[in-house]
Length: 114
Image 1: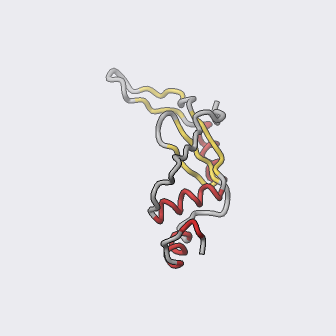
Image 2: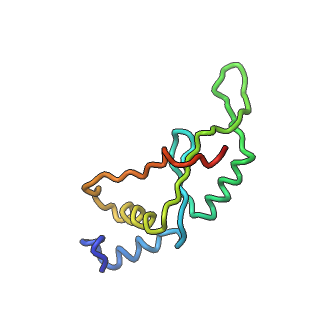
Image 3: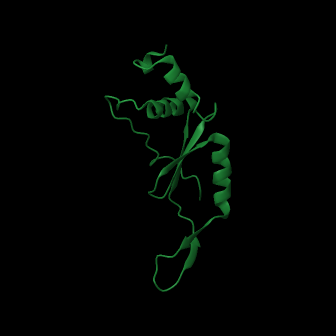
């Protein structure tokens, strides 16, 4: 049994692993200062390509609604399948936080959409 998952039965580990999405790499995509989205690699490419045509629906002004260019503050990072599986299994098994804080910093990655 995998030492990473001490205290869990083989059945619990097998059930958690069955919920992993794919066996490929992933994209982490952050748009603006919002959530960071995780996509299987090919789906992430599709999402990024779709954004080429996207515009922002801006109804924050009280005078009128505007259609404006999409935010240029978009960052991406490739997340390996191994990293995805580690983070996802921790989530599914509700493991305690690691002793050292982990930071997946995509703030300094290349802008994906310009």
